[in-house]
Length: 156
Ligand code: SF4
Ligand code: SF4
Image (cartoon, rainbow, N blue to C red):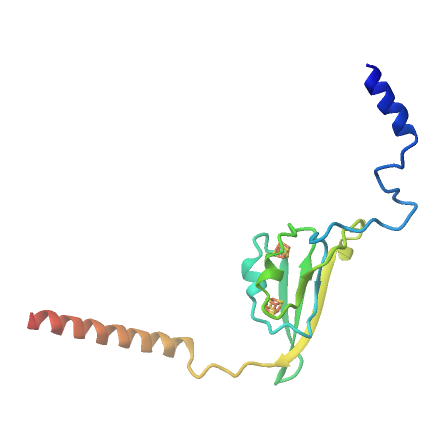
C-alpha cells in the first residue's frame, strides 16, 4: 500500500503525460501515420491502378467531354469509406497520392470527407475496329487454330 501512496504523491508534482487538446496546437501525429490522403491531379496519368487496389472501392473516376478532342477526368476519394491502408499511395507510380498525417477529420458535412482533383487530357483515338469486327476476327483465328490442330492429329 505504502509504495503506491508514494507513487501517487510523486505523480501530483509531475508534468502530465498527455497533451492538452483542444486548448493548444493539435498534437503531431506519429511518424508514418496514415491520415487523410492528398491527391495531386497534375501528376496523375489516369492509369487506374489506385482504383484496382482499393478494397473498399472508395474512389470514383468521372470523365466529362469538353470538346471533340479533350476530356476532363476527375478523381474523388471518399474518406468515409477509406480504411487508410495506403495501398493506393504505394501503387501510384506517379506519387500523385500521398497519405498525410492529417487526422482531424470531424465534420457533419459529408462533403468535407471528399478529396478530389481534376485534370484535362487528349481523348484517346477511336478504336480501329468495332466490337463485332473484333469478335469475327477472334472467331476466325480460333477456327484456323482448330483446323491446324486437327490437321496435325491426322498426320499422327
Ligand atoms: S495510380 Fe496514381 S497515376 Fe494512376 S490513376 Fe491513380 S492517382 Fe493517377
Ligand atoms: S488508403 Fe486504402 S482504402 Fe483508402 S483510398 Fe487508398 S486504397 Fe482505398
